[in-house]
Amino acid sequence: MKERKITKAVIPAAGRGTRFLPATKAQPKEMLPIVDTPTIQFVVEEAVASGIQDILIITGKDKRSIEDHFDKSLELEMLLERGNKHEMLHDVRKLSELAHIHYIRQSEQLGLGHAIQHARFHVEGEPFVVLLGDTIIESATPCVRQLIDVYEQVQGTVIGLEQVTADRVSRYGIIEGDEIAERTFRLRDLIEKPTPEEAPSLYAIGGRYILTPTIFDYLDQTRPGKNGEIQLTDALRRQAEQESVYGYHFDGIRYDIGDRVDYLITQVEYALRRKDLSERFLPYLKTLGRSL
Ligand code: G1P
Image (cartoon, rainbow, N blue to C red):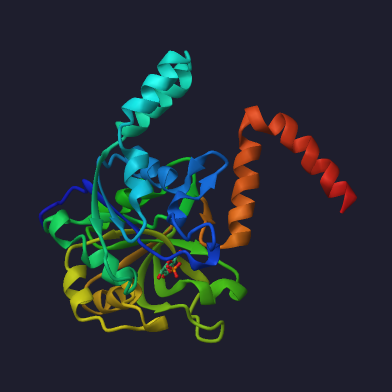
């Protein structure tokens, strides 16, 4: 089999973000900040740290702020330069040079599978990475890098897996598979948002995928599924019937920004990791904890 290198990533960021209204009335949920950094910046940085430079962001309505965020802002650079804010200037410049970012608009929100279909021509028949724009994964080796390493061995679709508790299975796609090597599964089935009774395992699809290009053919055949949406999970299910599809239980902590409590937890944990903030924030949390 011809070995194919992965050079492109796709970030779907076109969801409505209704759980975060009114904050998401005029801006995408992917721009919600974790302390001072928009969620999607962490996602782009993970792709870049994994060796990917070519990124396609699938945007929807009101997504202009994403484009502006990664674009060069001469006005802001001048302002920071004049104010001698060199460190900030460096960060702002670095941000606009992070990667080659392309955008495509999904005009109708028909589901994650439908969003991915918009990447068909951009990926030009090559395998590619998908990173959900509302999920941050904190790990020593970037999660996407871990999945690419597996892909290089198996040369097939690889889905990043996270172990969840039974009460959370109905929020995710859940897999059924056989462990063929440490942390690596060959998948037999995938079910989108099952009830705890229906769930075949506690391994959830964790928002990171390496997809081989035949996925587009399966997506073409996929009709609306759970919640009336065209589900990527349903297309993967068909792919797993015809080809070897793998899952990899990645090493890392997953933060689901689409959930309000998880979002709050992410804020607190990231603030505590920042030395400049934790000096004041940690004593406050300790006092608060004692008073509860
Ligand atoms: C999507 C996928 C689901 C996956 C989840 C991870 O669901 O459809 O399979 O487990 O992302 O966050 P969503 O969160 O868009 O409802």
